[in-house]
Image (cartoon, rainbow, N blue to C red; front, side, top):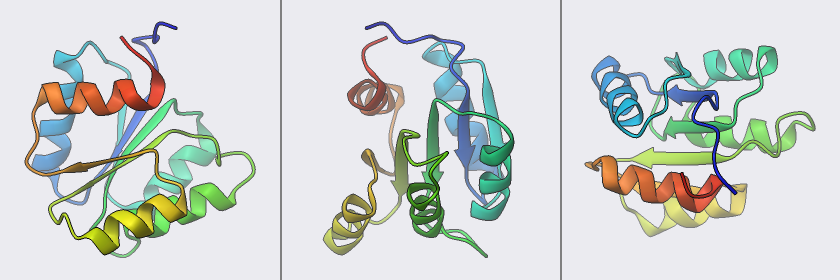
Length: 128
């Protein structure tokens, strides 16, 4: 299965620099249909208005964390199947386990590069 490079991707982070970094990495990988949200609630609103093929969300955000966003997405019948990758600066086992139990598809620990991101995306949505 080949991945459509026009696949809409939503990146969620409250840190503008991180949004820019992830957007640039995605562009390097050939993805150009990228939207941004500054927190979980903004992401949820965007997801209810547009279908995304992948969400890449930071864990630590205010007022709604990436973990809370993941739980909301998985509890919503129309969004529950959306592939979801969590990004965090902490590699705490508890967080990884909690995210897995909540239904995350993959997990990336900062810092990461294009090759790491490509591998994680491929593991979730297929090779591209």
